[in-house]
Image (cartoon, rainbow, N blue to C red; front, side, top):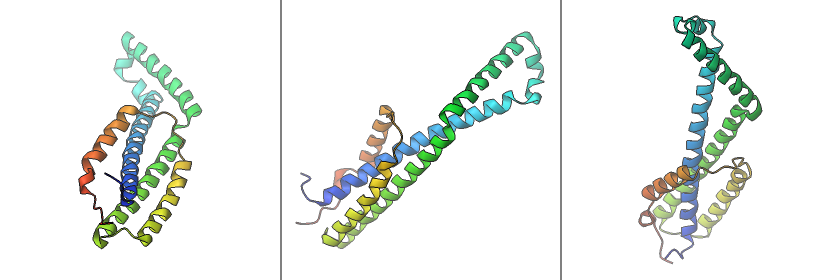
Length: 170
């Protein structure tokens, strides 16, 4: 079914879009977690918050001590895992996949407009894929969120079903 060489372009486009969605989702999750940690740390370090009447009651004092303990653990966690560095790497990955996806989508558009997939366009694909190597080389995530990956895969298949791709006559 997918024997024409142009399918390599389309497969790469789907892969780039999948990775863009995946890394965008992981990045969003990492940013939200970082924000929660920063808010907790700011709240526990604030004497204004500590002075609230709630924290001057018996149960409130327990809550305040628990909050202080949690933020101390968060501070240790952040110093060890360096989440801001992870966020920076995820931003780099997301940007790389976005650029690759854009280049492949542009190539796809030109294949459709020109009605062919000739040597010049094949050479352009090779150049685009050379850029993919630097993106892959920078991957630092070792854990794969299978549920997120499947959701991203389903989204890509919904947006780019095989029938929307132009296949020139051989």
